[in-house]
Every structure is written in C-alpha cells, then in structure tokens.
Amino acid sequence: MRTAFIETLLELAEQDDRVWLLTGDLGFSVLEPFVKRFSDRFVNMGIAEQNMTGVAAGLALEGKIVFTCSIANFPVMRCLEQIRNDVCYHNLNVKIVAVGGGVAYGAAGYTHFAVEDLAVMRAMPNMTVIAPGDQVEAGLATRAVKELQGPSYLRLGKAGESCVHKTTPLFTIGQAITVRQGNDITLISTGGILSEVLSAAEQLAPQFQVRVLSMPTVKPLDQDAVRKAADETKLIVTVEEHSKIGGLGDAVAEILIKDHFNCEVLKLALDSTSHSNVGSQSYLRQQFSLSAAWIARAVREKLEYNESL
Amino acid sequence: MADLLAVLYGKILRIDAANPKWAERDRFILSKGHGAAILYAVLAEKGFFSKELLNTYYQNGSFLAGHANSHNVPGVEVSTGSLGHGLPIGCGMALAGKRGNKPYRVFVIMSDGELDEGSNWEAILFAPQHKLDNLVAIVDYNKIQSFGTVSEVLDLDPLADKWLSFRWAAREIDGHNYKQIESTLESIPFEQGKPSVIIAHTVKGKGVSFMENQLVWHYKSPDDKQLAQALAELGLTK
Image 1 (cartoon, rainbow over the protein chains, first blue to last red):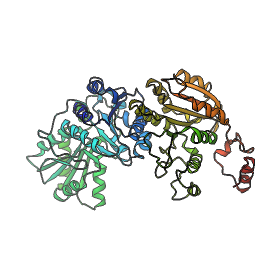
Image 2 (image 1 turned 90 degrees about the vertical axis):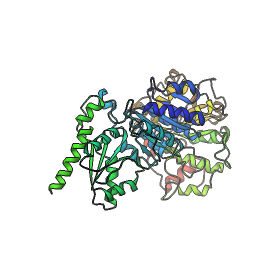
Image 3 (image 1 turned 180 degrees about the horizontal axis):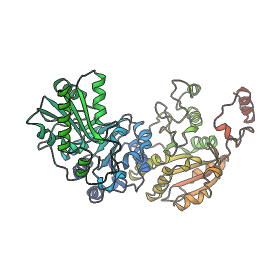
Image 4 (image 1 turned 60 degrees about the vertical axis):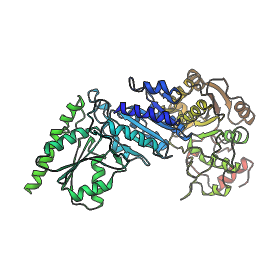
C-alpha cells in the first residue's frame, strides 16, 4: 500500500504545487522518488512528531496541502494534541498518513502496533478516517483525501498485501465498496484485513450467501450500506485489525442502535489483553483469531448458536 | 507582555486592520494563549474589531475566549491555549514564507513556563536547520509559572545560552523598556540565516504595586476597589 500511496502522491504533486510531504524520519526506500523530484516541498522533520504536525498546520494555514507521514501510531498519538488543536480545530488541509496500520509491524512489538488509531481519530472533530483495503483502494484514497477540504487520516498497510480489486472500483469517501454479493450475512471489513475477510466469505460460501463490504471510510461511515445490510441480511460481522473499542465495529453498531435495527452485530477485533504477542502480521492474525479461517469459524459458531436458541 | 504587544502592534508589525488576511502581512502568534485579553485589547485599538466587543470577553456566547481564539476574531492568526503549540506552527508559516520567497515575518510570543514543553525544543532545533531568519521568538520571561517560580519548578537559566547552543541569534532586553523593545525588534534578523529570539525580562503585574511578582494574580480578578487602585497606579481611568 505504501508504494501505491507514494506513486499517487508523486502524480498529485506533479499536478498541484500546493502538495507537500513531511516525514518523521521514516520512509527509507519508499519516499526517495518524492524527495528527489520535489525537494522544495519535502521536509524530513526528524524524530519529532509534535513539531511535524505543528509545522504541517502552519504550512496549511499558508495554503499548502500537507501530508505528514510516519509508521504505526507515531504520526497519530505522539502528536495527538497538535492534531486536535492545530489541525482539526482549524479544519486544516493536513493529511496524516500512517504506514503499517494494525499489526503490520507485529514483529517489532506493541510499541509499533497501530490498533487504537481508528478510535482516536474518529473522535477528532472534522477528521475523515480512511483505512484502505488494498493497494488499489490506497491509491484511490490518496487521491480522494488530497481533494478533500480539511483534515484526514489515512491508515495504510505496509507492503506486499494481496490485491483484492482486480479492476478499479468506484471510490467515494464515505461509501462502501461491495466486493461480494450475498443476502444471508454481511461481512464488513476495514483496512488491509480485507483479503482475509474475502477469503472467509469464500469458505462460508457453499453454505451461506455472504455479502462482503469493504469499508475504507470509517468516518463518515456509509450509513446507507449498513442499513441496507441490516435490512437484507440476518447478521452483520465487522472485521478490523484494531481494538474492539471505538473502531469499525462500534461505528456500525452505533447506526444500528440509533435506528433500532434488530440485526445483530458480531464484532471481530483485537482484545485489549492480547498485546504482549509478537510476530508477523499473518501469525498475529492467527493469534488474535482474525485469520480467514478464524473469521469463518466465528461466523459459523455465531449462526449455529443463533439457530440453537 | 502588554508592553511587548504595544510596541509590536504600534511600531513593528506590517498589518492592515482593514484587510486582516492580507497575504504579505506579518504573522503574529500568541503562543501563551492565556494572554488573550491583552491581544484582544490591542487588536481592538488597531481597529480589527470594535472596542465594545471587548466587554464580551470571557462571557457566555462570546468569540473572545479566555485563550486566544482565531475563530471569528479578525486579526488572531491561530487559536492557542494549550502551551507549546505556537512555535511549531510559526515554523511552518516561516518555512512556507522562506521557500516561497515571501516578504512576511513570523513573530511568536511564548511564556517562560511554556518552555517546559518538549514540542518547543523540537521547533527550536528545527528553525535554525532551515535557516528561518524570518522567524522571531519572544520569551516573556517573568520568572513565574502556574504553580511556582520558574527557578523552583524547572529552572531555565542560563536561558539565552540554551537558545544560542541551538544556533539561534539571541538578545536579552528589559521587556518594559519601549525604546529597547523597539530598537531590538527593528534589528531583526539579528543574523542573516538564523532565527531570532528575544528574551524579554519582565515583571508579572508590572506597574501595580500589589500585583507585581504575585502568583495569585495569574488566577484572581481584582474587585472594584483593587481595580480602581490598579488603574490609578497605572495613571489610567476606567
């Protein structure tokens, strides 16, 4: 995803000289093409995320469209107050980009997990929150946030994710992308776990008609797509490589509660107790019961339980 | 700080009250946003908005919040309040000006206690790296912070040496001496290619005998009698 991001950003910077890129001293072997081509609109801010975000706000006040970039939770949490007060309060054109959302840097340990970022960023005023499902969505999302007036958070994977979209889907901020049709149950996915979710749907397919929605925009959420799923299918399952608290699952549940839907929501996400685990992303997805097989199993168990009632 | 703002707005800043967003204006950031009352008074004096609006300060429904508010208040560049935000934002504005060959300058007033915040030291490291000689930091060094004196809490001395070692050009002045404030501000940048810092030695509550150097007046509002006495000592009428 990071390659799709930087390739798209290069195009955008070529077209629009307001586009700037700031990094917190990370991006080795990724950001070099931008540095080389647009050195006058690039700054390596050093390992100083608070100043990076404050400087981004200052540049945005001068009319720039500023992408701040680092890995995991660094561009989000270390500088959260700068995001809140300087960027969001003033509704500035600062686009925060986290490479390695979820447990993409899982072997590096919990300090390098980004698993509360969606919750925190959802709570920020004026903030649009996007976690693309694969590299195709990552490129489209980069283009979309550049055109968006105001702050946004782009939570990317790292590299080498499997590509879900074989053709270019219609990408609109705030709209779900239907990846698979079905009318028994709906799986809603945000972020790079989309490939696992789609694979889980295939495993369930002989028995159930499974709808899969990729939900890159967590805020504002596609309420119509959620309501439609609640009307047309008997179970909604949300899947995210994120804490159970405050992410996609809660966002979906909020709509169903507000509108008094009877449709159940099964939230598949990380427990807050499982953070001492270390390992590759695929290993950790197994450990956190978020691999395709575990997702399919959780859905089956839930449906069997419901049948038994 | 009132004296610093009086000279800045009276003599130094290139601004136009009729056109608060004039592209070439000097940018002023009150990083110590709790000094907002003084900033609002100065802006009203300069004609950015009506002096009558000052009566709404801190009142329900007012735009004039207790900390500097740029939302709906002409002339305030950026909303501040939480400390340690102004200098990084100022660095961003100065960098945009520098790389875009713009003539404007960026002034940031900070408190001494505010220098406890690590974000400032990130910015202090950043500005010389990018040769931001269009950036001026002014430290209102009154030696008192929220819950003690600066020397008791986190001693900043030797303060000028700290900025110098971070490769800023530094001057120390009497922050109540108008001539010194003006001549110092007129000579920026102190060195080509370096950001400038003015360490303004000040007295908290200057000019009011019972307020000078008293921590309690960071929090307290004077009653009618105290207000009359304070105004009399300052040679003013209500």
